[in-house]
Length: 182
Image (cartoon, rainbow, N blue to C red):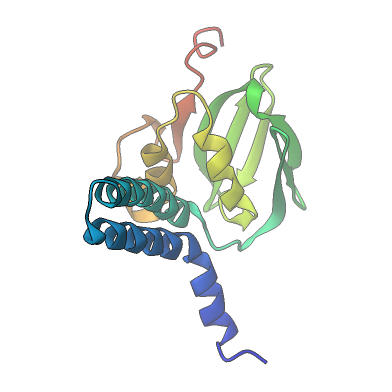
């Protein structure tokens, strides 16, 4: 029997990385407050690491959606797979040339296009889609701020970071070397 309601426990679990960054920053500040030639710089380094970790945790938190769409996203050894009732398939990360956010029938979808022209559509709010942040962040030349702003419904509508193609389609990333070839 848990003393915390399941909804509250889920919310706390969602924010766990940000809480860890705050705790790490508190440890760094405590070390810096102790002073001295060793602890002061060590505390500053720990606070700087906590700030970087906190920024990444904040971006992951904003990227994660509700998980209301049908289907499941899996990320395994450099391959993104989506298994859904109507759509599905797999794409190798090393073969990606374009990442686009499109809107079809009121639902936002990631459109991942490979070098050979094949595309995979993944709902933004599919179960497991939060794993895509780390996969997309590792793409060459990817700006994670643009990635997070594109998913954010309020900021995504206002942000003009990506190449605007149409009102319901926006290019988030293109491979720097392969985009000229396609």
